[in-house]
Each structure stands twice: as C-alpha cells, then as structure tokens.
Amino acid sequence: MTEKTLDRKDLTRALSVKANILRRHCIRSTTKAGSGHPTTCLSAADLVAALFFHAMRFDLRHPDHPVNDRFVLSKGHAAPLLYAAWAEAGAFPADHLMTLRKVDSDLEGHPTPRFRHAEVATGSLGQGLSIGAGMALAGKIDALPYRVYVLLGDGEVAEGAVWEAAAFASYYQLGNLTAIVDVNRLGQSQPTMLQHDIDRYAERFSAFGWFVEKVDGHDMDALINALDRVTSVTDKPTVILAKTVKGKGAPEVEDKDGWHGKALPSDLAERALANLQGDESDHLLASSLTLQPPDGSFRLKDLISEAQEPIGTVSLPRYKKGAMVATREAYGDALVALGAAYPDLVVLDGDVKNSTFSEKFFAAYPDRFFECFIAEQNMVGVAVGLAARGKRPFLSSFACFLTRAFDFIRMAAIGRAQIRICGSHAGVSIGEDGPSQMGLEDLAMMRAIPKGVVLYPCDAVSCVHLVNEMARYNGISYIRTTRPKTPVLYDNEEEFPIGGCKVLRSSPKDRLTIVAAGVTVFESLKAAQILSDKGISVRVVDLYSVKPIDKNTLLSCARETGNLVVTVEDHYPEGGLGEAVASAVAPEGIRVHQMAVGDIPRSGKPEELMDLYGISARHIVAKVLSLVKDDH
Image 1 (tube, rainbow, N blue to C red):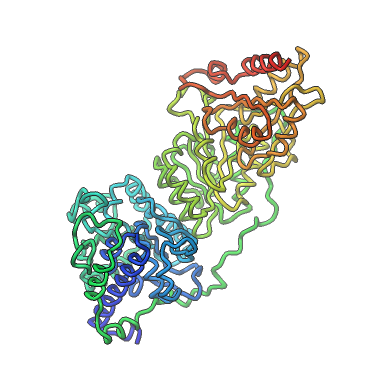
Image 2: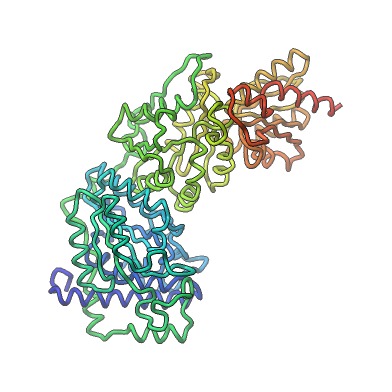
C-alpha cells in the first residue's frame, strides 16, 4: 500500500499514527540524551507527519535533486523531530536516533549541515523564513517546480527578521514558499505574546500579503486540506497557522509551563510512550506512508548545474595608474565582469546600490539582481538560501549596517554557507555623514567568523582582483570598500591571492615596518616619503588580506626592521588590523604599536577626520620618530 491506494479515512488515520511514531522517537531520543526539547517536538509532530508523508515531494535516492521540495526547520530546537521524520522516511536506521547530541553524532542539538538533510544551520530563532525565501527565490529564478516549506515556532514570530522575510516574500510573489507556524502558546520562560490568538497572527500575515490558512494543528484531516490548498496557490506566499498543544501526547506535560528544553525523566517518558503506543494494525497502516518523489518528467541529468568554474576567462576591468577611483566603484565594476563569467552569480543590496555601486550589476543583469530594501538581516538570510540552492550570492550594504545582521552571518558560518559580503563606507574617511554611518567595528566582527575571509583593498586594481577571488572562495568572505576615491596604485596584471600582502616600499636601511590597509596605505606612503626626506627609511606593507594573514611576510619584514611594527587603520582599535597583526607576530618577539580611531568620531571632511583621530600621515611620522628615538 502507498498513500495513493489509501482512501481518505485511512490516509488520515495513517498520518496520525505516523505523527505518534515521530513523538515516540522524540521522547526516546531526548530522554536517552538527557537533554533536548521534546515538548516542542510533540506539538509539531502532526504538522511534520502531514508535510513529509503527504504534501512534500522528495526523491530520497537523490537528495540533491533540483526539483525536490525543500524543508527548513526554523524552530531548530525541534531537531529531534526533524531527525525522526527523516528516519521514518528511510534516510537512515531509526536506531541512529539514539545517538542524539553525542559528540560523535551528526544529530546535533540544533541542526547543522553535518546532518546531510539539513541544508542550512538553524536554531537561532527568526532566521528560517529568510533562508526559505532565498531558496524559493532560487527556484523562481530557475523556473523549477519545487516548493519550500519552513516550520516556525510561534515564539520566534516576535523576531523582526520574520517580518522582514514576510515583506520580501510578498514583494517578490514567492508563491512557492509555505510557512507553517506551530502556535503552541508557550515560550521558553512564559506564554508567548499572542498565545493561541490565531486570528491576530492571521491578520498580521494577511497584512503582509500572504495567503493564510488557519487550522487545528492536531486535526489531521484539516491539515491535509490546508496543505492541499496552499500548494495550489502560486501568486503569493502562503502560511498555515496551526493551533497546537505543547507536549501533545504526553498528558502529564501537555500545555504546562516550565517544560521547555527539558527531557522527560524516564518514568514519565515510559508513561507517555505507552499513551502513544497504538496497535499493530495502526503501525502496519502507517508503514505504507513514504516520501513521494517529485514529478518524473524533470530528469536529474538535465537539471544539475555544473557551472562551478567560470564560463571562459574572467575579463576584469582595467584601470590607469594614478587614476582616482573609489574601491566601492571598482566593486561594482568587478561584479559586472564576473556576471558575464558566472551565470549562477546573483547580487543583493539593501537599498544603497547607488552608493555600493552594485547598481552597475543591476543595470547589466537585472534578472539576477534583487533589492532587499532596508532589511539587512533578511538580506543575509536570503543569500544563505540562494547559496543552498546553488547560487553564488554577493550582498552589499554600508559596513555599519551589516553589524545588525551579525547573528545571521555567524549562523551562515555554522552552516558552511558560501556567501560573499561587501561592506562599504568604512571608517572616518567617509566624512561628513558622521559616526552613525561609519563602519568602525566591521573588521572585528568579520574576523571573528570561523573560516571567514576578510579583505581590505586600497585601490581599484586590488579590489577587482579580490572580488574575483571571493567568487571562487568556498565559504564566507567579506570585502571592505571605502567611499573616497583613491589613486590606482597597482599594475592591472598584479595578482592578489587571499592570504597575501604587498610590500610597497623597502630598503636594507628600514628602521621599522608600517602595516596599513585601505585608505591608510596612502597616508603611510606619504609618511614614508616625509621620513625619507628626514633620512629615516621605513618599510610599508599593504595588508589587503586581513584574514587569513600573511604571517611569514610580516615576520620577515619585522625582523629586517628592528622587530618594530606600526599598524595604521581606519577602524576602532579593538579587533581590527592592529590586533590581527599583533596576534600573528607578537608571540615571535615583535613589538607592535597600533594607530587607530580611538574615540567616537564626528562629522567633518575626510582628511580632517583622519588627522583629528590620529591616522593621517602627520601622526604616522610623529609616531615613527618617537619610536626611532626610543630605539636608540
């Protein structure tokens, strides 16, 4: 028997039994682990059973099949339910569920891609809908018939990012996106704001332009009807608001506060398992339910993209030495060039495309550019979803505004997402707009991302080459661009590998090494010339790759220049260029003296501000003179 051979009554019964089987798996695995969130799994078990074994289409033999429906567990603490569903679908033996939360298991407390069927990391609440929107957008770009389902908890709907995603999905008419909200009333420490007021939730989603279904989340017949209705909607995103009972199936904890994140003790677990047992005929009926594959008319070999390498040679923009070009403008030039070579490259921006210059890509490839408006958290989440479905996303905003999306960025790193981020208008060098617009914390933020790359070009040539490197990097990368125009310093043929740096000025008589990046490279070169006129030689290094850092070159330079290094950066002292250099060379006995923006800045002209906050050529000269004097 399969679902297709069951009449409606038997189908409803079989799905209800399957839900109770999922509940039993969740209770057993969390009690064995001694930790977890069983009650939130129990409330959503009917939703997941109906979704997996009735609505969702997925070829288990080919998990990466491009037309498989996608499932995102936004309420990541319900991970045991996710694992149970895949075990019941036949992805792995059910016995493996008992390894939940063990250090050598892929069944972690919250899902990560270490578990094969979790395409993204979830668990920091409020992010799944943005990721699902990105996946749905990728399907729309490629005209593929899959649907994306996102299961949210009612507590996380308080997150502003959920509504950023809701607005985005409505704007782009993502009719292939369905959210399911498990409205079980209870949060972690107290009831949720709206508790079981389904109508209020419905009003809010309706106001955002969504098609809404309201159901009793434990009425399997109603769930089947709701899922069938939403899959017929194609012109707008859909949401199923399911009123449920937290702890459903375990009578002693049903709808009771204080059980969030607590495994059931063994005696209570045994009583709950007995309550959910069912008879042999029930289990036989439920065993007939399997994941149904997608439409067979879409052949796997015709759909899998092999566009991992560029089509032909990437033809990067070329610039005349000495020409004045802002690195932010070069970023836009590079995107256009890469767009011709990478058909999977897409670009997102947060309503500053005329400042980040991603508008150049929009003009060249409007079908692959997506305006995310002033919603940076959602922009990062959408990029993660796009990357999960095989796209090569670049996203941009002012560096300062990306700080609000940090949680999304760190979760993207946990999920091994391949996204590329540009933060423009960094530092006091932006000038008159003032401190609210000056990214002065972004290097610290991005250096903290595991396995992330942090790049900081000083001129147009280095910028376009580094953007090209980002397109090929397998992970998260960040490039810091600046507002003012700077002179083109390098030859167009120069190479800029990730993890390198450039020694711009050196001699055997150098007394110390100045390490700079971005706008401070030019201040350092000016200072070096002034010092040379005074008979003092210094070495100047352009540290265009802040992470990974070129430790060997820095050590070599420092050892050849009296073990003295001065770092100069348009960033706060904490976590920036200076600390990156110090962490690399100070353990080897190198003295590192940091020059950075040491106070909250104000409005003014760029050159005034760089001088006022101690990172101009004048201050570099004074610092070097004091160190050279002290060294003798």
